[in-house]
Length: 442
Ligand code: GLY
Image (cartoon, rainbow, N blue to C red; front, side):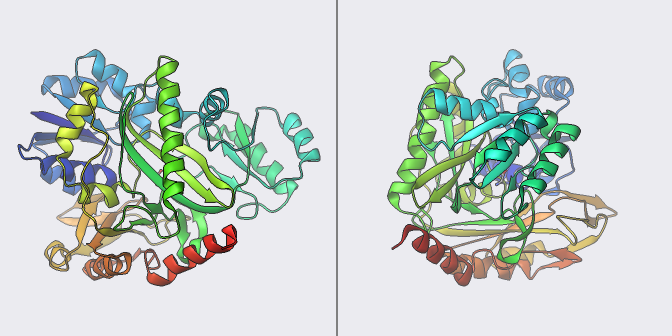
């Protein structure tokens, strides 16, 4: 069987590794915007090319007789790659462009939730005129969040108290979104700010059934103790019980209920969702709220869940595209900690072209797993780009043990790079648990 992986990040390396672990490993093909060395090695053939150039990707896939495609990032989904591949007879793990609106339009998602009374909705307003926002702002007495309606790579959301502290600063950002069409449109949402701990629930979906994977928590801020600018995600962890230390079983059930209701609503409107649905949730004092949907695996959280999947990932993908997905899969009862290695200055002024020296055998001997992301290979040297370079994952019986394995692996990565060493440490996790306890008043 010939399987195409679209995308060249750490997430897609995790997808590629999971696919080739199958009892009957497929022949792997890859199209990626950057030359990911890990995917390149796993693939029979790889094309380094813009993954949003749909006609080129489809023609390349067709010429190679691809039987199944797994699409990693949101940009090609937004560009309609699934519609085009499926029109040529290639089934895809990924939604078509209409179903991808759950990620590509935050307003679509909020309207869907309101219309179908889906739990987890927050108060929201949409604006495309500064005057209307000013008027709203005059009367506003709640803390709020500004979100461009379209895709911003996780970097467009601004939160009262974190990124702006006055109505004047809010207006300045709103002006920027409208003038620069941040997210591709001169339109933004204002949402009630919710306070708590964020968590990610990723699930495979065949249009009607959801197969949830273990929960994970990402760390979006660039610097330790959750300071600094928002990034694509600096690292993440998951726990051996597949929940998170600061969550209850009923938080998990609430998040899954929101996702199930969303999938039902999408089916009812005649635009069934097929692919991977990833809900970014906030556990608050008053229950679980949906912050946003993504229509793909999370990056880095895919590197928490895919390595501990004990069932055959390729088999699950095939069931998904047949519309015959099972609702559970076996995941090892293990905790995981994933830390991204990023170029020095990442988040503000990343240093590209800087060599990274890494000892793959040493990482593996330390018991950790390596996932390549955005690096260049020149003269047999690996150098940084402006994006996240590679990730190291530790897997063990508890989060602190997995963190120690991850750090042991990281000792074999050298260069002018930066890592958030606090992710998954016992101290950091304890602080989150205490914060949540205080919020809930227990
Ligand atoms: N975990 C952040 C993202 O995948 O968008």
